[in-house]
View 1 (cartoon, rainbow, N blue to C red):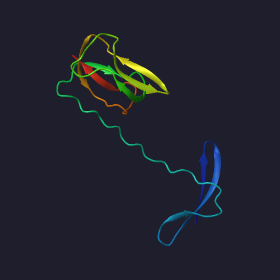
View 2: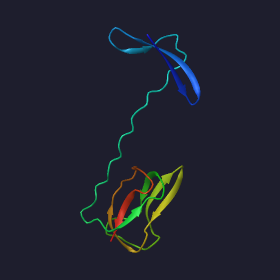
View 3: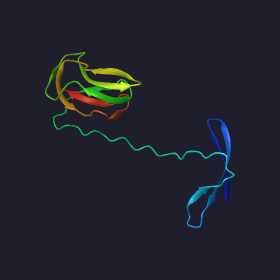
Length: 124
């Protein structure tokens, strides 16, 4: 048996862990609490750029999830037109074209988790 002291959000827990003969670890009955095991975060996937990717980047202003794609490749957009809608904290936030142009690539899909500043689309 091994004894551990674990602090979670300022609360201190004494935990006893017992190893079975098969090598499996189980919690001994004397333990008061078990801390959850930290799961490593997967590295974000880089969205592949389309062959005809444009030079004007449309970037996310906030982290969130892609809710809706408003424009399609080849579509003309004016400065301020919504290209993609992201959802953050139960709000829908439009990501708009920074200037007039034609959509060269859409680099995300509905449901993708995105970080603030991520390139979501490009324009020509």
